[in-house]
Length: 261
Image 1 (cartoon, rainbow, N blue to C red):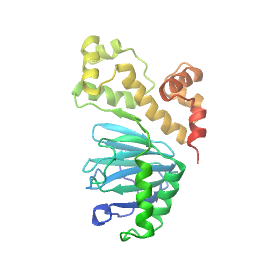
Image 2 (cartoon, rainbow, N blue to C red):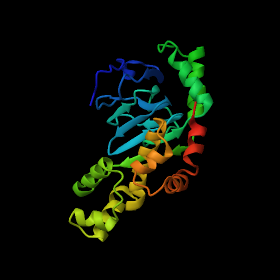
Image 3 (cartoon, helix red, strand yellow):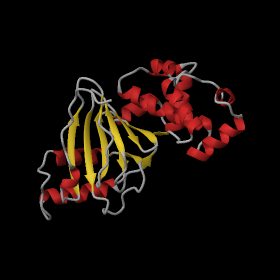
Image 4 (cartoon, one colour):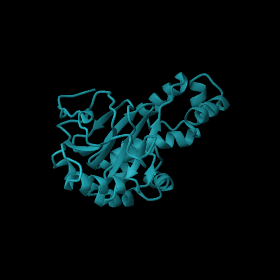
């Protein structure tokens, strides 16, 4: 849904420069851009708040000081929270060394500051200028950033697509895989095989990916760990913290401290 917030008109492909940048802020309410694609690859970076990207057959979360990489010509749309400040880099697909598939990149303080500064400059810069030199440093730094996967795959297989929709609608539903299989008229073995075949994960890991996406969104919005645990159906805050730490290698508190501005 696209609400009353108006996003700036910016055609990245109209620029011959290999990298151009844009900054934008959220409106009074969360807002979603229309589904679109462009020739230049896109890096969507959250400076504050959060962004949720729908890319092909998955939903990707962009927590603060992280970025999602969107390849050239990939259909996508971006849901931007009302409290978000966002930087977007558009990079020519001919630039070597960048990811070939969608992924989440950690963003260093240097990359963050270089990107913010680039958005304040004239995007019609010429080769061998100060801005062009800044872009070269930025690209070199981006190539060194580790990638992660904060995404929830939504399969095309009708039954799995229906289960994915239900999981997103009621993430607190903690039914076993056997119960989910019965609800969609198949055996547990069939459901297990389909999930592994379609998304390359076990059912538990697949559902866990959704919980990570939602947890990061809620943490960025300021929700407490206790409330997040309740909304995702965990028996206690400690059970949720254990899951979060096992998945991301750190507790929610440590994660927020590491990614806060």
